[in-house]
Image (cartoon, rainbow, N blue to C red):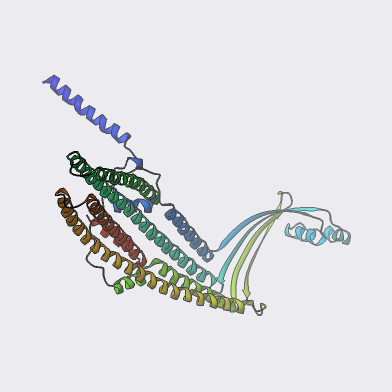
Length: 462
């Protein structure tokens, strides 16, 4: 019993050590990935794609500009240390006044006109605060806030574009894999027929040209299969690049798109989504608001501004003795005439507002065209999938009939190979039509600003 207990304890301890060791060497490289769903692919791209990183830095830059704009609400406090040495009569006398070291002898005209060099160390603390600056600081803060929101919308636009690029890359890999499988099955069927033809040739039922023709057909399919394998490798390279990763080899894709929906929602629904959800349209509206704030700032130049200022100084020649003083004041400014600068700024700002309005309207027209184009392409591709799927059934039935009649000696080999080629083409056409529809659907989601809803729905499809 004791030995058994010791062995059991040793086994448990060894298992615990193995778990700890496995945790230490757990693979972290994406090259160790074995499967990838569409949702995981999009999430990975949103974390690692360089375009996303660039947009995030721009957003951070806009946040810091907002902080800079808010700094105008607070008093500005500065400290400075200055050293001067002068023989200028006016500055020399003024320096002595600041140092509070004037004596009767300093009023001697000879010394006033030709003073000795005098040193001065000046420590100054100054404070400025805008009591009323025509509202420019407040308008600047509002502009910075709108710019930050616009940068956030730009990031959202890039995120949606990257997500759709990832979906397309994912679909391209699925298409390449499906094409490879179709060609592999076609090659397997062609080889089986070749073996049948060879057997019939040995029995004297067919001529040698049928055997040679069958060999050529098999060789062509083998060449097509090699090209399909190369295409699959290229598709995986594009997918890894979209994910922002180095090439991690081929992995198993767990999200498939075997079927197409029966119909699409009406066009008006997509248009409504686009005008409500497109982040670039929202950004254009923010830019219109920014232009409006700039117009308000320009008009505010006609009003007065009031500033509060204060300073505290310490002056000394050799740090043995020092003198201090302070100054407090207020400044009221009003531009009476600026050479028509203010009027020109107002007109410039008005032109900026009109330009921003035109961009918003132009973008709305562009969005309408993009949604309609994407919708009709998706609708056309969806119809093609139905036709292609029906053609597969027809090609399969035709091949069955031709094969039976060829085996009975009623048809020639050319007719059998044509039927095989027609079935292969029908299967590839369906796969490509389904791929074309899914790409068009993703582009329609991008045009309507609902990319992530589309990705979520596709992630649930099996």
